[in-house]
Image (cartoon, rainbow, N blue to C red; front, top):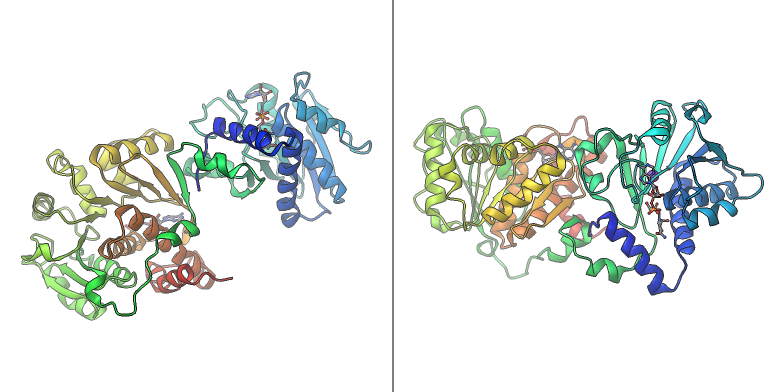
Length: 505
Ligand SMILES: NC(=O)C1=CN([C@@H]2O[C@H](COP(=O)(O)OP(=O)(O)OC[C@H]3O[C@@H](n4cnc5c(N)ncnc54)[C@H](O)[C@@H]3O)[C@@H](O)[C@H]2O)[C@@H](O)CC1
Ligand SMILES: Nc1ncnc2c1ncn2[C@@H]1O[C@H](COP(=O)(O)OP(=O)(O)O)[C@@H](O)[C@H]1O
Ligand SMILES: [K+]
């Protein structure tokens, strides 16, 4: 699923209107119906609904939604904020369509906004994608008043005041929505952690924008949905054997962190790898052999740390390195050897990233390699330097992937996968139960297994991150997010793969 800019969304609206021969008022009616459809499923008609409308088409949506909710017997009060002498045409059409008994309150002073109780619902239709400057003055005061009330706020299309594709200037007021209902496609702003308190829980409702326009629109930003990964999932063949599903090498674990190797290995095996060898420091030998009997185990000459590569490193199809390895000098040397000698794909995580990030010499060896990095935001900063905000982080992500020709899965609530072409694919599965030690180690195992099975590096990243998040979503149903562990996520990988191969009705 593509993510379009505000300007492209306007073009999509205009294109749809031309292509379908409908009026812009009809499209607005569709948007308002889609919005109220969601609203009716969420809130009871007994709720008081206060709809705050601005002067543009977002306000027009608000007026149309107020009328539709009134028809559905909600107790609705529309408000028109500020000077609407230059209101949009569709705003004016919908103002006229309000029935006699549903007259709007004109808000010319912030004091005209009533004290709202905790049980009130607010619909925020002040500004949408037409926002062209930070929200200050009366609109800013109204937003601050709504934010400080206890009311439940639902924003139409986007929280008012939030820029959809770039950093919102600090002086602008932004609605702190509990829910945001966006039309047709999600907006980039929804996927960035810094906007969590503004966007709240977001949903996308279809309004029939032209699929042709969307397919042809140029965008480097995507959301990965289930149907996307199902398209490249490889079925297992009846006469196949383990030799056809790749032999992975995991270089993981260190003294006190052998669990990282166990988790990565278990996740790798649960993701379809044909054969798995794990090399651990000597102290890890009994642990690995006991905890993961399916994996072959090699030992390093060093008792506590990774310090050497296996002799026959070329026989492996993929190498996953990093979880639990630490940053000892001997380990740095081994990573240098790995980057210098192997042409096989490598998945680098955790301390492997920290080691590379701290050494310009190692960074110089990254070019023209088949590499996937799986950093969390702190590890990412060790690779690229300090970032200013989430937009700056995305910019660094694209530049780093383009410069080194590599893939980066920048982990988070919506893990962002950067590609060498400068594209970014945001993941749509997973939940806060994943915010616990070891889940990243499991992800390294999953992605390593998929690369071993000859998925392209892009497919392995997108499918791996998706299925890892899906396993957590399935685990949520039985263990919840508070108690979830990395082992729970691994234990739910089978159901997650089943879900993808045999979609539940
Ligand atoms: N036919 C269409 O084009 C459709 C549009 N839709 C709605 O239309 C919205 C976009 O509508 P518009 O393009 O009219 O834009 P908005 O309604 O977001 O706002 C534009 C108006 O606000 C003013 N404005 C912008 N920033 C301001 C600020 N900081 N302070 C004060 N005034 C400010 C502008 O001068 C303009 O009058 C979407 O978000 C969506 O809600 C939907 O109805 C779907 C169909
Ligand atoms: N709030 C969250 N919502 C969804 N996914 C999350 C959240 N927090 C963390 N994750 C996911 O959990 C994993 C954590 O990885 P990482 O930080 O490397 O953990 P560790 O190093 O302990 O294994 C990543 O896949 C990340 O995307
Ligand atoms: K809005």
